[in-house]
Length: 481
Ligand SMILES: Cc1cc2nc3c(=O)[nH]c(=O)nc-3n(C[C@H](O)[C@H](O)[C@H](O)COP(=O)(O)O)c2cc1C
Ligand SMILES: [Mn+2]
Image 1 (cartoon, helix red, strand yellow):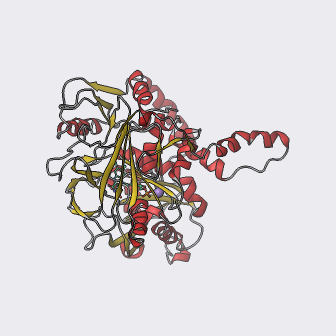
Image 2 (image 1 turned 90 degrees about the horizontal axis):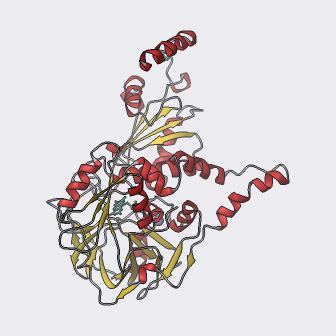
Image 3 (image 1 turned 180 degrees about the vertical axis):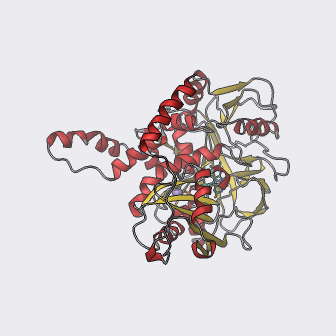
């Protein structure tokens, strides 16, 4: 497991999964345009290392997580489903039947004891301490022509609940206002916003630390939809299979990953807001400008030779699809702890996570599909789901064209569509009001007599087993030619 972003980049290079760009490329639109081409080149394209961002001496890395293969490498697994299975095991350890069985559980127990982060005193991220530091030598991108400015797109934003001291980490973009101030785009439903809400109620300044370019596992963890109050670093320790090393900040009462290349220390004042945006967003459209809290920089700490890790969002597919895919696989076993009838789930790239969620279930009773919809609308960030499609467990939710076929054939729109209303993602521009709008569940399961369907449900077409075997034989010969 890579304990440093540089190790990841070096390994990607060795595996021919990285393109180095030696010529000068401008952080003003050009790096984003090249990154967009990579993301659209099929399978996510290569990771990119811009060695000479025009006007800056710090290299820029982008799209490093932007393929299934690189996402798996970053998390140290050969398939994301392996990770899902490990978590499943962790959640339901088999009862040991004897001493040998119990010994087999030891690796699992060890893995749990390694979850807690540990504090170190000497950290690469503090090789240089700049108490009057600015953002001026960071090659921060302008991503799209109509963006309100330059945005730090892949920051790990650390805060503590002012009352309980519980930590949160989230990835929230930061628009550069000047060398010492940025926007802080934590949306109202997110962990950072909740800490800020409490700080404002207490009339207190909220310390904030922003880690850039940390060990790869942590970049993922900051995007993960961890339940509120659960420390993202526990997930980090689990994924890294070792305790994450943290170091105390210099000017604020927070800790940051020792492995980060750059750390921005600072605070957010109660009551202060400033216009942020527009920004070419995950949706593929520009988000409207809106008022958000302001981050004030107190100190920059960094390595001597940092790499600036960034990403761009825009029309899908983009790098964030693969970060989301990791969450899809990692959180499925956790969701199944509360909703065990869920067999599989998928967030297609075109649905940008929340616009389209496809779930297969082991249907057990009438109305079951609707129960699942409501469970999702009440579960963590799944609450944002705008359209939820529920299918029977024999449908492969990872195959969007199979799902489209099943929806078309299995759904009677008047009977099978469940409309409701609730919180929607802040990025949803279709709703009349910000963050509040409509939701639709589509029950595409086979309908039962107990649900009022008294006709005979048609059987899915498939050939006989014998003819199928014969066809397979002949086909392998035809294909082998
Ligand atoms: C590249 C990228 C950029 C993101 N930008 C934002 C953002 O600006 N604001 C926001 O609230 N969430 C943003 N997110 C989503 C959050 O990181 C995500 O919802 C995360 O789970 C929040 O963590 P939290 O629950 O601890 O707040 C972004 C995600 C990614 C992958
Ligand atoms: Mn959180």
